[in-house]
Image (cartoon, rainbow, N blue to C red; front, side):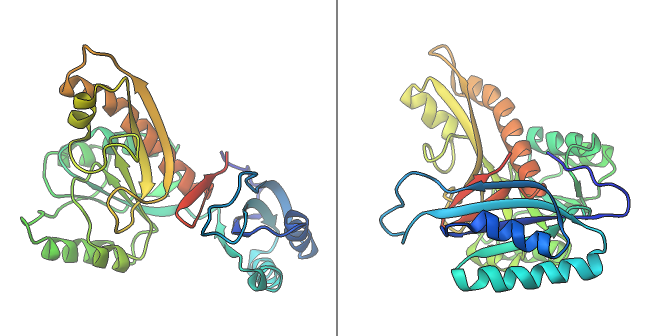
Length: 297
């Protein structure tokens, strides 16, 4: 999804989440209008289902795409109005510039299907991002990356102790990425690394989480005799394969499939799921709060 911007206008996206407040959408749209912003898209969700036991009440999620004629003065006025409106209500909100592509660094290993899908979609203009480089702990994907004209850096994983390789990756990534994507990067990232990287990290897991967490999910699925296999794209947190889910999909299989057949079938699902999740994040359509996400169309 994208909102077409006429020449001379700055386009921005607002994401809001927090406790439900009656009249929130009207108040936010009114605050934008009062500061001269032209709202071109407005979406809100307040789930009707009961809140979890550990939550005080329902959570509202809101996304607005708006334009201002003079961003240098108009956006600060919008921000001030939102501070006054939302900060005392326990709301979390961000504004991003839709005209500035996010910087996306990709980490990969030997498997190239998810990586090449992202690079192909990027070349076609489907992913509004800059890709400063691709980092891999193996050289298997180097030729494919360089074919797309993207710089490639090889950083070996370094055996059991990953601290040296993580430190090298941090030096390459820090300050150069608004998003890091693990395109089948088959390494578990440490909590220290995730805290220091300074950007959200999206991973693709080759199962329909929360089923078959960790390594070898296709073999685990085969051992259970599943009739559906899937893939899950999620934000990375210190807990393995437990971060907020962005996108999922499945494919039907049957008793004739062995573990390798499941893996081949699943590769199609993995690359589609990851690319959709990345696109949603780049277009500021994902609102994450309390371990769950809402993804606006």
